[in-house]
Amino acid sequence: MSFPWLKGHGTENDFVLLPDHDGTVHGELDGSFVAALCHRRRGIGADGVLRVIRTAALRRTDPAVESAGEWFMDYRNADGSVSEMCGNGVRVFGLHLLQEGLVDPAAPIVVGTRDGDKIVTFDTAAGPGDALISVDMGVPHVQGTSKVSADGNTWEAQDVRTGNPHAVAFIDRLGDAGTLLTEPEYDRSVYPEGVNIEFVVREGERHVAMRVHERGSGETRSCGTGACAVAVATAVADGAERPSTYRVDVPGGTVHVTWRADDHIVLTGPAEIVARGTMDWTA
Ligand SMILES: N[C@@H](CCC[C@H](N)C(=O)O)C(=O)O
Image (tube, rainbow, N blue to C red; front, side, top):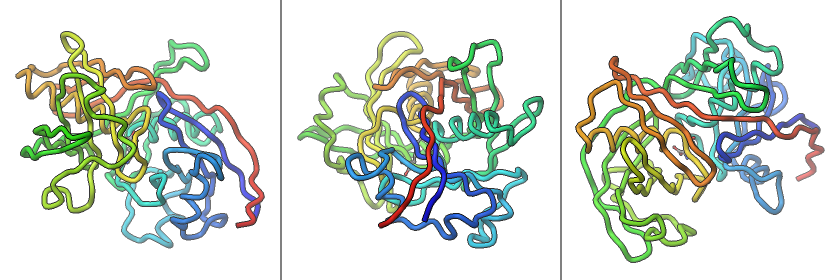
């Protein structure tokens, strides 16, 4: 099988993009194929896969998907599992649609996801390669707390849903979470579908830094939904009035998260497409 691919990232949260506009290239995207593509030694290497497919085409194999938009981000984690949403992925996805001329540059870009439609916008003042790309992530849900443990330490973690599940733990030093080579322990009765776990330190007023262990991908250099969950948990802890904007430093760069007066959260940061090719797949 031969198929086109691209590689992109948002603050070093990296993705293989698979253009499959009419669903004729990959059919029902297979989890083991995704895991092989994402493998850092044997594949292209990535934190996840973004299949670029028309909503109407995806509905033929997955009737549960819905979107008012033409294009759907069919997202998979590095282990091949499906997640509802990817905040950095949807920003990379929007950039790709724009660069390939697949959307009207004068109109808001609507991207279908398993967490509903997301609107992607661009800061056109920035130069090529430096574009800041924002996405309206919708309304977050702040729930209870539970415990997470890593490297022999245990912390209280705030449950925040930003399209997918997050447990946000405030810790003294980012190193206290250890290597994160294995999944931190968490309460499976709270998160039966698994969870993304963020470890956060305060850097200053409206400024935090985080590490993340992502469900299905391990420790990554950034997580957009995670940065949003962190900003929301911090704003709740601060008793911050809305609108409020937090700077969130991740190992791969910096994003900003605004919690608007209408309750929606907006994630803003850089993204770029760095490579493309054709794969002759023999596995
Ligand atoms: N890196 C993503 C989140 C990807 C999905 C996550 N691992 C999950 O399983 O929920 C982001 O930028 O939001």
